[in-house]
Image 1 (cartoon, rainbow, N blue to C red):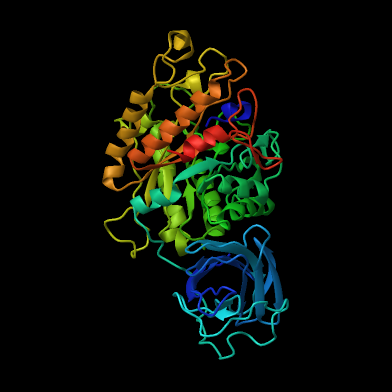
Image 2 (image 1 turned 30 degrees about the vertical axis):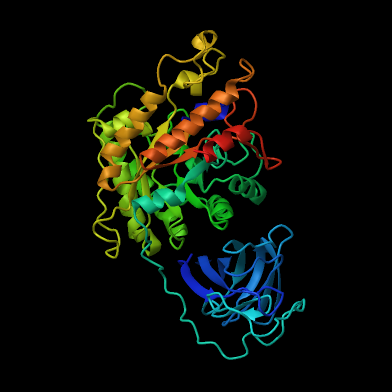
Amino acid sequence: MHSLRKVLAVATAAVVAVAGSVAVSSQASAAAGCRVDYTVSNQWQSGFGANVQVTNLGDPITSWDLRFSFGAGQIVSQLWNGSVTQSGAAVSVRNAGWNGNVATNSTASFGFNGTWAGSNPAPTAFTLNGVACTGSPVTPTSTPTTSPSATPSQTPRPTATPTPTPTPTQTTGPITGNATQLVAAMGKGWNLGNQLEANINGVPSETAWGNPVITGALIDRVKASGFTTIRIPVSYLSKIGSGPSYTVDAAWRGRIKQVVDLAYDRGLHVIVNMHGDGYKSVSGSWLICDASGQDTIKAKYQKVWQQVASTFQGYGGRLILESMNENFDGQYGAPTQPCYSNINAYNQVFVDTVRQTGGNNTSRWLLVPGWNTNIDYTTGSYGFVVPTDQYRSSAVPSNEKRLMISAHYYDPWDFTGTESGVITQWGPNATNASNASKKSTWGQQDFMDAQLKKMHDKFVVNGYPVFIGEYGSIDKTAFDSTNNRFRADYARTLVATAKKYGAATAYWDNGHNGQYGFALFDRGSATVTQQGIIDAIMGS
C-alpha cells in the first residue's frame, strides 16, 4: 500500500526428518507412537536455530518430555514453547503450561537456538515420556516410566551408540512443492505493516509510526487467530551505505532477521520485501522508475538484494522474497514508458541476484509485481514482463515455476480507503433503500470476481501462482455503527474469491485501531481487536 495511506490508516539450513514414537504414561496395553521432525531452520558461524515437531500417533497425552542427545557437542542456548534442561550431550524438553495436551494425530512443537563447533549433525534418536521413538504406532510390552527424572541422565538414550548422521551440507535443496501446493500452504496471510518499513526522514525504525516493538507474543496471537503467512514490509533507505558496495547497516539487517525468525520459527510462511525505497513520497527513496541514473539505481538494488538474500540463503521453502512494493511513477493514469521497462528490469535484477547467492535461493519461490501491483496494469497489454529464471536450480522440475505474481486489491477505494464517512457499506447486504447512499456505485462482488479472474487467466493457468499481498478496509464505525459488518463481508468475499481463482492472500494491517485504522490486533497487548473480520477471513 502507498506509504501515506499506511501512515494514516550464515550457512544454509539442513532439514532432517527423524522418525520416532510418542508413548503415553498409562497401561502397557495402551497404543503409542509418534513422529519427530527435527529441522535446522538456519545456521551461522557457531550458532544455529532449530524447530522440532512431534506428531502424536497414539492415545492422547496431557504432558510430554522429549529427550534426545547431540552428537557433536551442541548446546541449547534459548528455547521457546517449552522448558529445557541439558546435561552434557543429553537434552530434555518438557511442555510449556499451555501445550502439554496432544490429541491423537495432533502435534506439539518447540524451537530453539543453539551453539555448535566443527559440525552440527541432527540427533538420530528420540524418546518421549520414556519410550524410544519408532515412527509408527506401537503397543508397549511393559509399562513405561511414568515420571522421568527432572535432569537427564549423563548417558544418552538409547544406550546403544546411534549411527552417526552426516554433517548437513550447505543446501537442503531443492525447495519442493508446486504452485498449487504453495498457495494451499500459504493460505490466509497478514501484513506486519507500518513496522520495518516505517521511517522518519528516511531513517527506518520499527516504532517510527507509533507501533510498539514487535514481539513473539504478537506473532503467537496472529498465528493462534488462524493466519498461516506473515508478510513483512521492509525499508532500507538511509541504512544503505555508499557505493559501490552499498552495505546495509548490520544492526538493521540483524533486526530484520530477528523479526523474520519470530514468524518463521513458529512454522509460518514469511514474505520479505523492499517497501518504501520506491516511494517518491518518502524521504531518501531511490528505487524510482522515472529517475535519471538508472544504471546506478540498478547497481544499488542488486547489492542490497545480494546482502538480504545471502542472509536468508539457508531458510527453507516457507520463506519467500518479494522484489518491491507498488513501484510506479506516482501518477495513477496508464503506465508510462520507459518507467515500466525499468520496473521489469528491477524484477529481473532481483531474480538473477537472489538465484546467484546459491543455497536454497536457487529454488526458492520469488514474488514479483507489475505496475503499482495493479491488476489491470499487470494482466493487460501495458508492458508487464515476467522475469526469466535462468539461474534457478536444475533440480526444479522443468514443468514447474518458481516465480509468483503479486497484486494488491483495494477496490472500491471510496469504501476501503477514503477517509470520510460517506461510503461505509459494501456488498449485497447493503441493499436497503436507506443504505443506497452509503454504498459505492462500483467495485462490488461481480467486479471483484472479474478482477481476480484476470489474474487466474493470465498467470495461474500458466503455472505462476498469484498472491494478493494486500487487501482490507479502514474503520469507519465513527460514521456508521454497522461498518464492521461490511468490512467483514468485504474480507470474506475477497479471500473466498481469491481461493476460487487459485490465489493466496494477506490482509493489510497497519497497527492502527480506531477511526480509519486497518488493525485487527492491538500490538502492544497482543490481543484481538476485530474478531468479526478475522472470523470472516478464516471462514472463507
